[in-house]
Length: 372
Length: 148
Image: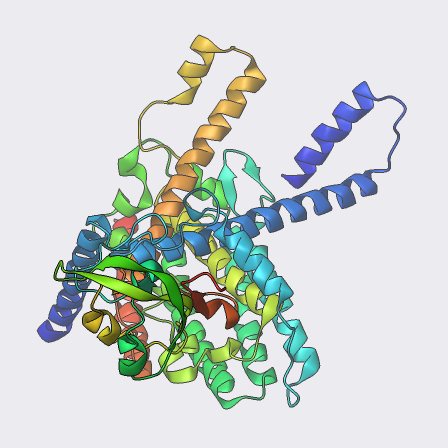
């Protein structure tokens, strides 16, 4: 997909700007920077707004208002928070392993932003289109657990270390039900390509994988969602940073911008897992309605230019994708402020005794269904 | 085996119930008061900052003597002409002293209200004003009379 963009732009440039004769490698490098910047900007913007929305939702769920002073309805609160965090002293404990301590937030960001590279946002809109997209996402998101252990270990603080250890146990355990839920989708579609998975769900609400093989895929979606919530350390599975037990868990010793990176990565991760859930089970950018909304409006009132119509189709797909993802993100926030935190042994029991066997038998059942 | 599935279903159902309860509060009325725009109406007998009307003061020194923390300072001179003042009961009496300095140190005041209660002319009173924070100790000392 990246190559298609580059070829298209290069062709356009060569046709219209005959003076320019840039080697193709330079185009690649330029596009890497542009897409990298787009991912970084988009993910950070979402993280900032997500933090604001989280505080606002928390306030509303507790009969108060939440931040509403900075900007209209408090929308610029995340900028105020960001400025505050940038101005804070950057403190590294004396006993800390300095190199690991500094490296941990960056490793975390690799795991978080790497996922975004493989997500399809709309028809033909995405950074890359790799045919093993799911496997890639599974693999690169494991950077997060490494970063959390790095942070916990490097802080030279028993609470942080506990947080890191718990996180390792939790994330590695919960990756298994997630993997099995992925497998189920791969079994149905026969591909790991995210675009093809979405195209396999075209044709209305009943074709989405949640509703395709009732009730098995629905259960698989539930298993995925619960396990994903544990993957990104959200309450009720936030024992790696459980405030009441571990102060701040693995990020106890972090302050200033390094802390902000952990904080932003949490929200970016929320978006990522919700997006994966949307793509695998809720039809990605497929509309639940049998008709297009924007295209007839555009052709009737504005123009019937082919390029313009394509843009409208993309825009509508992106809108559906975003609305599904944001609904799942809101559900995560809603759950966070509803449920108390699990104990460590309960957490493990939920994974190994409930999610794993359910996911496994679920997969068997769908396999049988597909065979018969 | 039945208990296993029962536990899963009961657990999921309790999550749904919890979500319903929080959603109820999400949609319900919010109780936060937007402070500078909205304010409480204070109860009638609320004791806020002490306010004085020095022209009514007859310099009886009641408030200075009764104040438990001695935060009131009062200086006076004999006036050239006696001035008529009305007491709380509505009687008229002559004021024979002029107040030259009436200071209340709000930083030490404990808002007990004893001064206002005993003041014969109502020259000193507890207001409903509770926004008395300021940037320096000097500003906490209020002057209620023109220094002569």
